[in-house]
Image 1 (cartoon, one colour):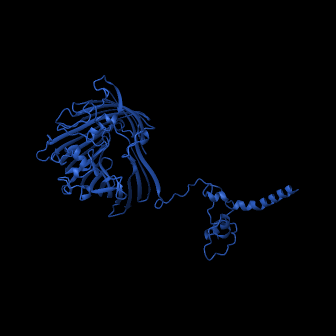
Image 2: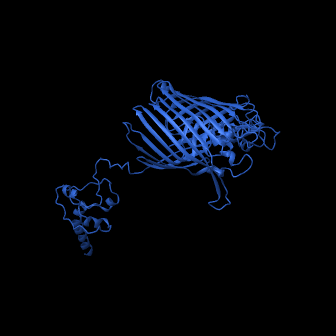
Length: 574
């Protein structure tokens, strides 16, 4: 009997509650508004519920049920639909999309990045280091240690043996605003050896604001960027360097874009910043465990663009120092007084020309002058495979730490070029059509004049350097491509032995043509002149590439580099 009475009570309660449940949002609906549940079916002409007196002060926040019973309906609700609580009601189950967030007010997060992960193996037959007179045996070595074109900060760099690199930008943008932080690193530590100088920490952080306005019938755009960022000009992708400069700095940039006609755009870029060079002392208490000196730099770039046919620019940049902290020494010739005269100045331009069927051509000449380059260490401008004045002085002006022989002063006259065409362009087909064949012809020339002190032991006041090559790639299938590349590098045009060349076939796999990721395997066969050896030296006896005697020193110093290199690389840009 008690069970029957309990069942009857439950049925009665359900009969009373069911009509109300059909008109009120459920707890689940309140927890997840906008789930697409059906709206109430009562007609809009239903009599509204009586209003409750308005409270003198806003009531405290309450659970859903209480809020539904106390808040008065709005005026618009009274005229169009039955009384409802002010809490969000479930959306009607229609195909209409939800209202888009406000572009002007809502941040839109983004993540972009790039990495390359190469496995490079140099193959050679050599005597054992502990038995130099014994029989040679096959060796498999870390290829960058045994080649001459793997150093990013060297004119010999071909990008065939590029090493670890990864970067990721995490940011957000809304209308007229963009901000991001970048983390970068140059060594994958989980592969074994831990390189404590490889980065993997915040590298860049910037904020960009821009605005559109109307002036005299034109609609210019001004973008202001501040923080630590990498503006770059004269980018030469085939050799991964810059003929005009990339700036490692903290500073500002103003970029004005003016569409002077429907298909013509003029842009002016101005920037100023500081590079930071320092020394870290782990034994000193923070914040006194490092010292920092500043290099100053500014740059200006004027560009003109007509459709996709012409994109031309003129460029100027200058870097110098006025910070005594850069040189904490009073040694003769190495003190702050000569450092005040140190400077790097670049003037040049670049032009890209494209035409239907004819392909595209990029040409970029530049002239760089350097004075007392030794006093501007690793901060500021990156140009022509060199970082700041010290890098230019070491690579091109005979600087090796001996002031009587060189102050790292002189000038470079450079020109880079790249021509590209494809079968799809010749046939007037859309980019990305398969099968397709692409041809690239490229080169970089440097005419170097050394400004040497009287009595210098350096035997050349003029050096010419030239590298050039070509590649042809067959995109056989949407996911499969074959490439053949040839490179020639002459490190000293006045001495025939400073030359090497390579031929490189490559097979590339990707998800689809023109995608941002690839997995490729390649084989490079090298041929070396007599002077292109491990830890090679200039005719006057100093290292051609700074640090090569550390990496390539030892038993095999002066031997031929590896002639055969096999490489497997994963690359992703997203």
